[in-house]
Image (spheres, rainbow, N blue to C red):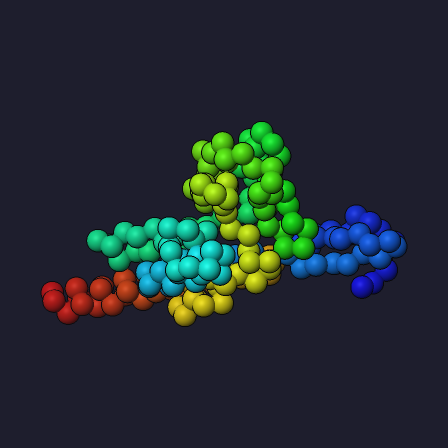
Amino acid sequence: MSTCRNPYVLLGAILVRSNLYLEVLTLKLLVSYPERCSGCRSCESFCSLFHEKEINPAKSRIHVVRFEDRGVFIPAFCVQCSSPACKVVCPTQAIYEDLKTGAYLVNKKRCIGCKMCVFACPVGAMSIDRNAGAVKCDLCNGDPYCARICSSKALEYVEYDRVGMNKKRAGVTRLLGAAILREEQLVEIAKGI
């Protein structure tokens, strides 16, 4: 903990107030790299095991969207929107922000299972459980199990300010790979002439 005279010092972090002290917590995000995903679905199995104490991908908070004909697998989960539509449309205000993790959570006592959040979510990350009501990724209390067990590193839990740099590196790598491939194709074409 450190003392801070300016209570508005905030950029890429969450401030938690405790008497005269401010604790600066680094905001982290769960990020997916679909180009690395093998489609093994371990993330789904371990998520359901962690939350529901059973291996049942249907009860997972993360789902792998599969395009098997193209060999493309995309992990889909709650991206913890800055202005979440699920929270806005909830008639009982059951969705709230956990200040420690930055995750939006569902208060099970307030949720009435109306499915408004399911329809409002732009990425399809909300679901309804008959017994529990609305269900979504809670970032496993700040240590997402799916990211810990992903052997291909298709899921990572990274600091907010690293997200942009990682995406830039991945984009440059793809561009360089495409440029090298094009150069090889041109050489092959030239040899064939």
